Length: 183
Image (tube, rainbow, N blue to C red; front, side, top):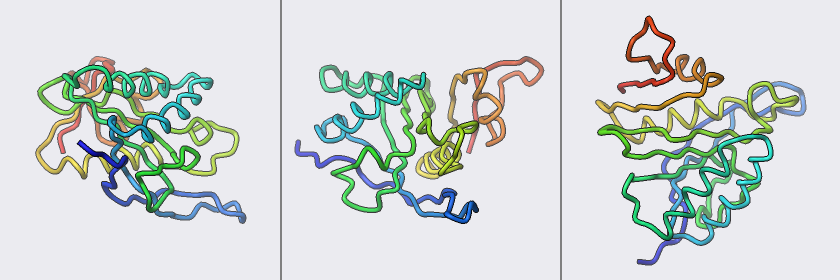
């Protein structure tokens, strides 16, 4: 099978800090990476460097690279949010704002990892972009369509983020990091 690399899924808007120190909407692209594309493999290898910030990028890269040598029994899929607006078969790692890895671990859709470029995460000294994680989650949910359930296991630091975008725990009275949303 011939594959050309990342495939455009949808456009999505995020906020970018302008020279006047005000945020304005810009267009980005939500793309699906192909583990059969050497170019996409190389992009994720470069982004594994985000791991010096203690991120999930190295794990996402390792999972992506392993698909080249084993069957995709968990149904892993990999997505990126990029400022690039065309030529997705030649993604520029410098334009990648975030990564999303999903699987079919449960009967429904499962978020394995969501990782924003550490330079633009909440709490970063200067956030050139904001809304990356929320935008990626919204684009993924839109891609799935209606009447779907998404599950994830959150880190304690990220649980509030997921709850703000509508994820709930199975038992609301218990502080549980296993969350889901039905769209």
